[in-house]
Image 1 (cartoon, rainbow, N blue to C red):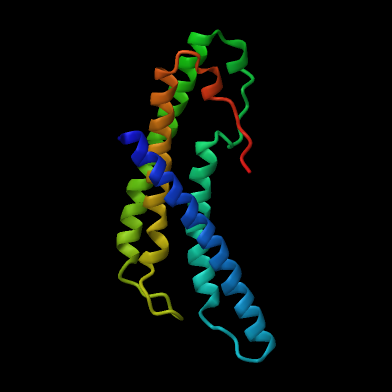
Image 2: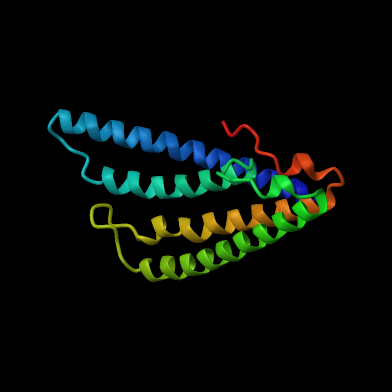
Length: 166
């Protein structure tokens, strides 16, 4: 059941990321056309920036799910399988601690900024800053999922290799 829930969460995450990318394109295109026609869309910059923050954090998690972030396996490649597994676990725990820290302070920042409106749109700035705890929380969840998979998988070599991201 947990695996099914995670699969649904991942599908929703990808769909939201695609919608955000399409939304950014539409808003920026409308702003460009509006400016050309002499009727600028004054809220377009705020809307596209807010969507971009969400898109970046969701894309960061989607890339993390596919082991697509930059790494230098110079030391890890020289280790035995058990030693490599321990090194990768320590590394993942450090990353997890950082993500939990960022999610916690992202939550504080989102809460603090929720009382301020965006100047042109008049909606809460918390709409944009809520991307921080959500995005870092999703990345923390992905890191935990990868840790569990790493320790449950007997032939775990394929579990940590980079995969094609796109």
